[in-house]
Length: 291
Ligand SMILES: Nc1ncnc2c1ncn2[C@@H]1O[C@H](COP(=O)(O)OP(=O)(O)OP(=O)(O)O)[C@@H](O)[C@H]1O
Ligand code: SF4
Ligand code: SF4
Image 1 (tube, protein in one colour):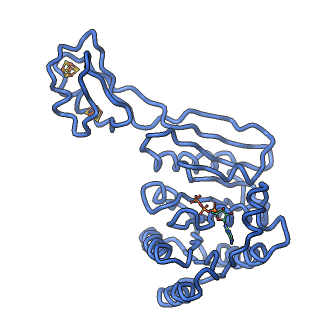
Image 2: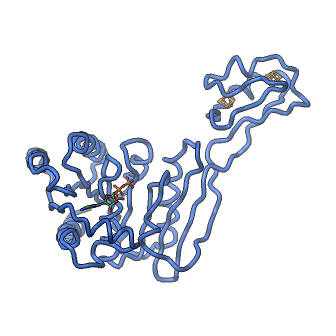
Image 3: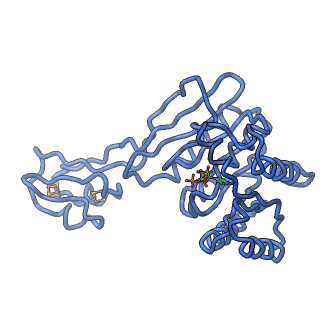
Protein backbone atom coordinates (compact mmCIF):
# COMPACT_ATOMS: atom_id res chain seq x y z
CA UNK A 1 0.00 0.00 0.00
CA UNK A 2 1.38 3.40 -1.03
CA UNK A 3 0.43 5.99 1.53
CA UNK A 4 0.07 9.63 0.57
CA UNK A 5 -0.21 12.13 3.40
CA UNK A 6 -1.55 15.63 2.87
CA UNK A 7 -0.30 18.25 5.32
CA UNK A 8 -0.40 21.98 5.62
CA UNK A 9 1.16 23.16 8.88
CA UNK A 10 -1.29 26.01 9.18
CA UNK A 11 -4.97 25.21 9.73
CA UNK A 12 -7.55 26.27 7.13
CA UNK A 13 -5.10 26.15 4.22
CA UNK A 14 -7.13 23.71 2.13
CA UNK A 15 -5.75 20.32 3.16
CA UNK A 16 -9.17 18.68 3.43
CA UNK A 17 -10.39 20.36 0.21
CA UNK A 18 -7.48 18.78 -1.64
CA UNK A 19 -7.57 15.43 0.17
CA UNK A 20 -11.29 14.98 -0.61
CA UNK A 21 -10.70 15.81 -4.29
CA UNK A 22 -7.81 13.32 -4.46
CA UNK A 23 -9.96 10.61 -2.86
CA UNK A 24 -12.60 11.22 -5.53
CA UNK A 25 -10.13 11.31 -8.43
CA UNK A 26 -8.31 8.17 -7.27
CA UNK A 27 -11.54 6.40 -6.32
CA UNK A 28 -9.43 5.55 -3.26
CA UNK A 29 -10.19 2.24 -1.56
CA UNK A 30 -8.52 3.35 1.66
CA UNK A 31 -8.40 6.74 3.26
CA UNK A 32 -8.17 8.34 6.66
CA UNK A 33 -8.74 11.59 8.49
CA UNK A 34 -5.95 12.19 11.01
CA UNK A 35 -7.28 15.56 12.13
CA UNK A 36 -8.61 13.93 15.29
CA UNK A 37 -9.21 17.25 17.06
CA UNK A 38 -11.67 18.43 14.42
CA UNK A 39 -12.32 15.71 11.82
CA UNK A 40 -14.39 16.88 8.86
CA UNK A 41 -13.52 14.64 5.92
CA UNK A 42 -16.59 12.48 6.62
CA UNK A 43 -18.79 15.51 5.83
CA UNK A 44 -17.51 15.64 2.25
CA UNK A 45 -16.96 11.96 1.46
CA UNK A 46 -20.62 11.16 2.15
CA UNK A 47 -21.05 7.69 3.67
CA UNK A 48 -24.55 6.32 3.97
CA UNK A 49 -23.48 3.37 6.14
CA UNK A 50 -22.91 3.89 9.85
CA UNK A 51 -19.32 3.49 11.08
CA UNK A 52 -18.15 0.79 13.48
CA UNK A 53 -17.23 2.66 16.67
CA UNK A 54 -14.67 1.82 19.30
CA UNK A 55 -13.66 3.66 22.46
CA UNK A 56 -10.08 4.81 22.49
CA UNK A 57 -8.26 4.69 25.81
CA UNK A 58 -5.45 7.20 26.26
CA UNK A 59 -3.42 7.88 29.38
CA UNK A 60 -4.76 6.42 32.63
CA UNK A 61 -6.12 8.88 35.19
CA UNK A 62 -5.69 8.87 38.96
CA UNK A 63 -8.73 7.98 41.05
CA UNK A 64 -8.82 8.53 44.82
CA UNK A 65 -10.80 6.25 47.10
CA UNK A 66 -12.16 8.60 49.82
CA UNK A 67 -12.76 5.64 52.14
CA UNK A 68 -9.04 4.87 52.26
CA UNK A 69 -7.67 8.44 52.13
CA UNK A 70 -6.16 9.69 55.42
CA UNK A 71 -5.76 13.26 54.11
CA UNK A 72 -1.98 13.31 54.42
CA UNK A 73 -1.71 15.74 51.45
CA UNK A 74 1.26 13.87 49.90
CA UNK A 75 -0.45 13.40 46.55
CA UNK A 76 -1.40 17.08 46.19
CA UNK A 77 2.09 18.26 47.14
CA UNK A 78 3.77 15.92 44.67
CA UNK A 79 1.51 16.41 41.66
CA UNK A 80 3.48 18.56 39.20
CA UNK A 81 0.33 19.29 37.23
CA UNK A 82 -1.75 20.72 40.10
CA UNK A 83 -4.38 18.15 39.30
CA UNK A 84 -5.26 17.33 42.89
CA UNK A 85 -7.28 19.63 45.11
CA UNK A 86 -8.96 19.41 48.46
CA UNK A 87 -12.50 20.42 49.06
CA UNK A 88 -14.13 18.25 51.66
CA UNK A 89 -12.37 15.32 50.07
CA UNK A 90 -9.24 15.00 47.93
CA UNK A 91 -10.16 14.91 44.28
CA UNK A 92 -8.43 14.70 40.89
CA UNK A 93 -9.19 17.04 38.02
CA UNK A 94 -9.11 14.63 35.07
CA UNK A 95 -8.55 17.41 32.55
CA UNK A 96 -5.33 18.34 34.37
CA UNK A 97 -4.17 14.81 35.26
CA UNK A 98 -1.37 13.64 32.96
CA UNK A 99 -1.45 10.06 34.23
CA UNK A 100 2.16 10.14 35.52
CA UNK A 101 1.33 7.90 38.50
CA UNK A 102 3.38 9.88 41.06
CA UNK A 103 0.39 10.30 43.39
CA UNK A 104 -0.23 6.55 43.37
CA UNK A 105 3.42 6.02 44.23
CA UNK A 106 3.52 8.48 47.15
CA UNK A 107 0.17 7.63 48.72
CA UNK A 108 0.99 5.83 52.01
CA UNK A 109 -2.30 3.96 52.22
CA UNK A 110 -2.83 2.88 48.56
CA UNK A 111 -5.89 5.08 48.24
CA UNK A 112 -5.03 6.00 44.64
CA UNK A 113 -5.32 3.80 41.59
CA UNK A 114 -4.61 4.59 37.96
CA UNK A 115 -7.66 3.78 35.83
CA UNK A 116 -7.92 3.65 32.04
CA UNK A 117 -9.88 6.61 30.71
CA UNK A 118 -11.74 6.99 27.41
CA UNK A 119 -9.89 9.68 25.46
CA UNK A 120 -11.76 9.50 22.18
CA UNK A 121 -13.67 7.41 19.71
CA UNK A 122 -12.36 5.53 16.67
CA UNK A 123 -14.70 5.15 13.69
CA UNK A 124 -14.32 2.83 10.74
CA UNK A 125 -16.55 3.17 7.70
CA UNK A 126 -16.55 0.19 5.37
CA UNK A 127 -18.85 -0.99 2.57
CA UNK A 128 -16.90 -4.07 1.49
CA UNK A 129 -15.14 -2.08 -1.22
CA UNK A 130 -13.83 1.05 0.48
CA UNK A 131 -12.54 1.83 3.92
CA UNK A 132 -12.46 5.15 5.71
CA UNK A 133 -10.83 5.47 9.12
CA UNK A 134 -11.34 8.46 11.38
CA UNK A 135 -11.60 9.42 15.04
CA UNK A 136 -12.69 12.14 17.38
CA UNK A 137 -10.59 13.08 20.37
CA UNK A 138 -12.52 13.77 23.54
CA UNK A 139 -12.38 17.39 24.69
CA UNK A 140 -9.47 18.01 27.03
CA UNK A 141 -7.65 14.82 26.14
CA UNK A 142 -4.02 15.30 25.20
CA UNK A 143 -3.14 12.06 23.47
CA UNK A 144 -3.88 12.98 19.87
CA UNK A 145 -0.62 11.53 18.52
CA UNK A 146 -1.48 8.09 19.87
CA UNK A 147 -5.00 8.33 18.45
CA UNK A 148 -3.64 9.29 15.01
CA UNK A 149 -1.49 6.15 15.10
CA UNK A 150 -4.62 4.10 15.86
CA UNK A 151 -6.53 5.73 12.96
CA UNK A 152 -3.79 4.72 10.53
CA UNK A 153 -3.47 1.26 12.04
CA UNK A 154 -7.17 0.49 11.70
CA UNK A 155 -7.21 1.74 8.09
CA UNK A 156 -4.28 -0.50 7.14
CA UNK A 157 -5.76 -3.52 8.89
CA UNK A 158 -9.14 -3.09 7.18
CA UNK A 159 -7.77 -2.41 3.69
CA UNK A 160 -4.53 -4.36 3.56
CA UNK A 161 -4.88 -5.03 -0.20
CA UNK A 162 -5.50 -1.42 -1.25
CA UNK A 163 -2.84 -0.06 -3.60
CA UNK A 164 -3.21 3.51 -2.44
CA UNK A 165 -4.20 5.19 0.81
CA UNK A 166 -4.86 8.91 1.07
CA UNK A 167 -4.45 10.46 4.50
CA UNK A 168 -5.72 13.89 5.47
CA UNK A 169 -3.12 14.89 8.06
CA UNK A 170 -3.38 16.86 11.26
CA UNK A 171 -2.85 20.60 11.30
CA UNK A 172 0.14 22.12 13.06
CA UNK A 173 3.56 20.55 13.51
CA UNK A 174 3.11 18.79 16.86
CA UNK A 175 2.77 15.23 18.03
CA UNK A 176 -0.21 14.25 15.80
CA UNK A 177 1.68 15.42 12.71
CA UNK A 178 4.69 13.32 13.67
CA UNK A 179 2.32 10.36 14.14
CA UNK A 180 0.71 11.09 10.73
CA UNK A 181 4.12 11.14 9.05
CA UNK A 182 5.36 7.86 10.39
CA UNK A 183 5.45 5.16 7.69
CA UNK A 184 4.00 7.18 4.79
CA UNK A 185 5.55 7.07 1.30
CA UNK A 186 5.04 10.69 0.35
CA UNK A 187 3.85 13.99 1.78
CA UNK A 188 2.06 16.62 -0.24
CA UNK A 189 2.33 19.96 1.51
CA UNK A 190 -0.47 22.39 0.81
CA UNK A 191 1.02 25.82 1.41
CA UNK A 192 -0.70 29.14 1.76
CA UNK A 193 1.03 32.27 0.40
CA UNK A 194 1.01 34.21 3.67
CA UNK A 195 3.85 34.99 6.08
CA UNK A 196 2.60 32.49 8.65
CA UNK A 197 1.81 29.96 5.87
CA UNK A 198 5.42 30.12 4.64
CA UNK A 199 6.85 29.77 8.13
CA UNK A 200 4.62 26.74 8.89
CA UNK A 201 5.45 25.19 5.52
CA UNK A 202 9.19 25.43 6.23
CA UNK A 203 8.75 23.78 9.61
CA UNK A 204 6.72 20.92 8.11
CA UNK A 205 9.31 20.43 5.35
CA UNK A 206 12.06 20.18 7.97
CA UNK A 207 10.03 17.67 9.96
CA UNK A 208 9.33 15.53 6.87
CA UNK A 209 13.05 15.70 5.97
CA UNK A 210 13.92 14.21 9.37
CA UNK A 211 11.75 11.20 8.46
CA UNK A 212 13.38 11.03 5.00
CA UNK A 213 9.90 11.19 3.46
CA UNK A 214 9.52 12.18 -0.19
CA UNK A 215 7.90 15.63 -0.20
CA UNK A 216 6.22 17.83 -2.80
CA UNK A 217 4.61 21.25 -2.43
CA UNK A 218 1.61 22.96 -3.97
CA UNK A 219 0.07 26.34 -3.14
CA UNK A 220 -3.60 26.87 -2.50
CA UNK A 221 -5.24 30.30 -3.00
CA UNK A 222 -1.97 31.31 -4.71
CA UNK A 223 -3.44 34.51 -6.16
CA UNK A 224 -4.00 35.96 -2.68
CA UNK A 225 -0.27 36.88 -2.84
CA UNK A 226 1.73 36.36 -6.01
CA UNK A 227 4.80 37.75 -4.23
CA UNK A 228 4.65 35.09 -1.50
CA UNK A 229 3.77 32.40 -4.07
CA UNK A 230 6.98 33.22 -5.93
CA UNK A 231 8.87 33.16 -2.62
CA UNK A 232 7.60 29.62 -1.93
CA UNK A 233 8.52 28.48 -5.45
CA UNK A 234 12.05 29.88 -5.04
CA UNK A 235 12.34 28.17 -1.65
CA UNK A 236 11.32 24.80 -3.16
CA UNK A 237 13.81 25.21 -5.99
CA UNK A 238 16.60 25.98 -3.53
CA UNK A 239 15.68 22.94 -1.41
CA UNK A 240 15.36 20.67 -4.47
CA UNK A 241 11.70 19.96 -3.66
CA UNK A 242 9.21 19.30 -6.46
CA UNK A 243 6.80 22.22 -6.75
CA UNK A 244 3.70 20.77 -8.36
CA UNK A 245 1.14 23.47 -8.81
CA UNK A 246 -0.77 26.60 -8.00
CA UNK A 247 -4.45 26.44 -7.10
CA UNK A 248 -6.36 29.73 -7.39
CA UNK A 249 -8.73 31.23 -4.87
CA UNK A 250 -12.16 30.20 -6.08
CA UNK A 251 -15.50 30.98 -4.45
CA UNK A 252 -16.86 27.82 -6.10
CA UNK A 253 -14.55 25.79 -3.86
CA UNK A 254 -16.37 27.10 -0.79
CA UNK A 255 -19.76 26.43 -2.41
CA UNK A 256 -18.77 22.87 -3.32
CA UNK A 257 -17.52 22.07 0.19
CA UNK A 258 -20.60 23.66 1.78
CA UNK A 259 -22.77 21.41 -0.42
CA UNK A 260 -20.84 18.34 0.69
CA UNK A 261 -19.08 18.03 -2.69
CA UNK A 262 -15.44 18.03 -3.67
CA UNK A 263 -13.96 20.68 -5.97
CA UNK A 264 -13.63 18.07 -8.72
CA UNK A 265 -17.37 17.27 -8.60
CA UNK A 266 -18.13 20.60 -10.21
CA UNK A 267 -16.70 22.51 -13.14
CA UNK A 268 -14.51 25.20 -11.53
CA UNK A 269 -11.03 26.70 -11.83
CA UNK A 270 -9.81 25.32 -8.50
CA UNK A 271 -11.02 21.83 -9.51
CA UNK A 272 -9.08 22.00 -12.78
CA UNK A 273 -5.91 23.05 -10.94
CA UNK A 274 -6.37 20.34 -8.29
CA UNK A 275 -6.64 17.69 -11.05
CA UNK A 276 -3.25 18.76 -12.39
CA UNK A 277 -1.71 18.64 -8.93
CA UNK A 278 -3.25 15.19 -8.44
CA UNK A 279 -1.69 13.75 -11.61
CA UNK A 280 1.73 15.14 -10.74
CA UNK A 281 1.44 13.78 -7.20
CA UNK A 282 0.54 10.28 -8.44
CA UNK A 283 3.46 10.33 -10.89
CA UNK A 284 5.82 11.14 -8.04
CA UNK A 285 4.26 8.64 -5.64
CA UNK A 286 4.36 5.73 -8.08
CA UNK A 287 7.58 6.62 -9.94
CA UNK A 288 10.13 3.83 -10.18
CA UNK A 289 12.55 3.84 -7.29
CA UNK A 290 10.10 6.06 -5.43
CA UNK A 291 9.98 4.01 -2.24
N1 LIG B 1 -8.91 27.34 -3.57
C1 LIG B 1 -9.78 27.78 -2.69
N2 LIG B 1 -10.46 28.93 -2.89
C2 LIG B 1 -11.34 29.41 -1.98
N3 LIG B 1 -11.62 28.79 -0.81
C3 LIG B 1 -10.98 27.64 -0.56
C4 LIG B 1 -10.05 27.05 -1.47
N4 LIG B 1 -9.57 25.91 -0.92
C5 LIG B 1 -10.19 25.76 0.26
N5 LIG B 1 -11.04 26.79 0.49
C6 LIG B 1 -11.88 27.02 1.68
O1 LIG B 1 -11.02 27.29 2.78
C7 LIG B 1 -11.57 26.73 3.98
C8 LIG B 1 -10.56 25.80 4.61
O2 LIG B 1 -10.35 24.70 3.75
P1 LIG B 1 -10.08 23.23 4.33
O3 LIG B 1 -11.10 22.85 5.32
O4 LIG B 1 -9.85 22.35 3.17
O5 LIG B 1 -8.71 23.52 5.06
P2 LIG B 1 -7.89 22.60 6.04
O6 LIG B 1 -6.46 22.95 5.82
O7 LIG B 1 -8.26 21.18 5.87
O8 LIG B 1 -8.42 23.15 7.42
P3 LIG B 1 -8.30 22.46 8.87
O9 LIG B 1 -6.90 22.62 9.25
O10 LIG B 1 -9.24 23.29 9.68
O11 LIG B 1 -8.74 21.03 8.71
C9 LIG B 1 -12.86 26.02 3.56
O12 LIG B 1 -13.94 26.88 3.81
C10 LIG B 1 -12.70 25.79 2.06
O13 LIG B 1 -13.94 25.76 1.39
S1 SF4 C 1 -1.29 10.81 37.99
FE1 SF4 C 1 0.25 12.42 38.03
S2 SF4 C 1 -0.78 14.13 37.08
FE2 SF4 C 1 -2.38 12.71 37.65
S3 SF4 C 1 -3.04 13.40 39.62
FE3 SF4 C 1 -1.49 11.85 39.98
S4 SF4 C 1 0.43 12.99 40.19
FE4 SF4 C 1 -1.08 14.37 39.28
S1 SF4 D 1 -1.68 10.66 49.36
FE1 SF4 D 1 -3.33 9.17 49.65
S2 SF4 D 1 -3.90 9.40 51.75
FE2 SF4 D 1 -2.67 11.15 51.29
S3 SF4 D 1 -4.18 12.71 50.72
FE3 SF4 D 1 -3.56 11.71 48.86
S4 SF4 D 1 -5.04 10.08 48.56
FE4 SF4 D 1 -5.22 10.76 50.66
